[in-house]
Length: 122
Image (tube, rainbow, N blue to C red; front, side, top):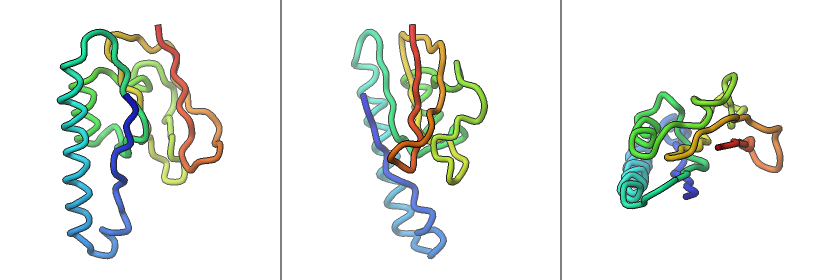
C-alpha cells in the first residue's frame, strides 16, 4: 500500500491557527487508524510506505510500526536517513510484514522536495 498522510502545517501553528492544526491532526489520526484497520485483514507479506509526514519519534509512526511491522531504515539503514533534507527530517518510510530489509538508503534529490527511499528486501 502506498500512503500519503496529511502534512503537518507548521505555518498554521506559527500563525496561531489552532483549528487548522486540530483538523490536520484529526485527519492524520484517522488515516493511520484506517491503515491499521486494513493491515490485520490482509494475509501474507505486506509493504506500506510513502510520504507519511511523521518522524520516527512521533506517535503515529509508532502506531504504524506496531500494526504493520518494522521500518526498513531502522532495520537496514545507515545514518540519519533524511528524506526531507530541508528540515533534516526522515518522514518517508517503508514498513513491512513478512519481508526482511537488507539495505535501505536515501537517494540523491530528484524533482521533489523529498528524497527517494530505496529499500532492498529478501
